[in-house]
Length: 194
Ligand code: IMP
Image (cartoon, rainbow, N blue to C red; front, side):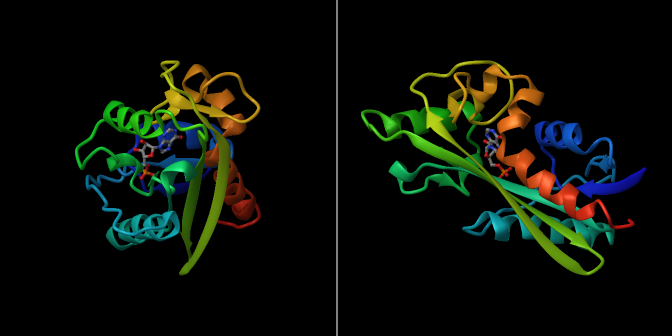
């Protein structure tokens, strides 16, 4: 089976992405490549941050790879937390603290619309490809569910009465931003011999 490095340290992302690509690709994680680094995300777009992650791993391994960067964008908060989603409540913030800050910011706010956006960056044979996926929904006032990670417990995707954290991984993948971006990656790779 064909092998591709996924430039992430996030085990939840590896699980979701492997769940989508497992029939086509053997996904190798950074840990499996013996790489233990935290890649910074200094830019203000997911495209630029995803590119930074993939280029960092390409330069360390010399191998083709893909990365992804995801943010939760809330228009009523001027697009925050956006590319700062992991560090919304501070550089060492936990998901719980990030959610707390998000809920406080939306307190009394009638417009609770939000969307996740994922950008996947593939570096293949000297070329760069970007694929994106969006999932629209709403931020609910109290956490619901125990599955998933990040902001899943307060995100209700459009067309569902359950939050991402109340879904199985397969159910989340039906709606998710990441699945949409990864399927575009898979479609692109389908006919390429790697
Ligand atoms: P990253 O910069 O792509 O690693 O992701 C930034 C942050 O966004 C993560 O630390 C999570 O808090 C959040 N996040 C990313 N993807 C998801 C998701 O699918 N559900 C909920 N939160 C997510």
